[in-house]
Length: 167
Image (cartoon, rainbow, N blue to C red):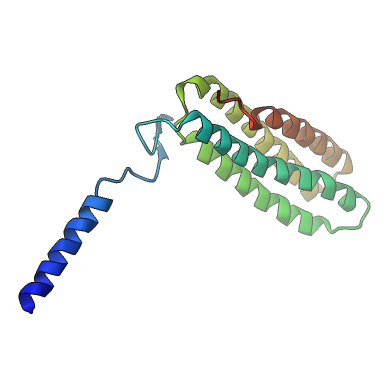
């Protein structure tokens, strides 16, 4: 009986090691020198990368459009500045996460330049959202309108990269 238990544990350990020990790492990091260490040595497939870019882009676009609409409510006094400020700060974290996610994702070779363009546009969205937050903090209606205009332009620019053709 004792031998059977040891044998079963040994078989279980072997199965665990065979199925899990050779799995690729699941995290990536940006080194201090700015070089990206990807989670895998192989890039994503073109179709997977296209879908991934669409998902990350749509996340950011949704944040920008929401604040664009809410800014009108804030300006009319129909929604509190403090609540919109809190929501905008939460959105900034979401945008930063999307930028980090794309930065550490290993793209197919044919998307290397497109990736840089998308990251540039995403960085612009972050800057526009930061300007919106500052305008809300100062309750500066003119600056809010300017920031919203920038956010709308950023959303339009980002939309161009959502549906990359992977054929």
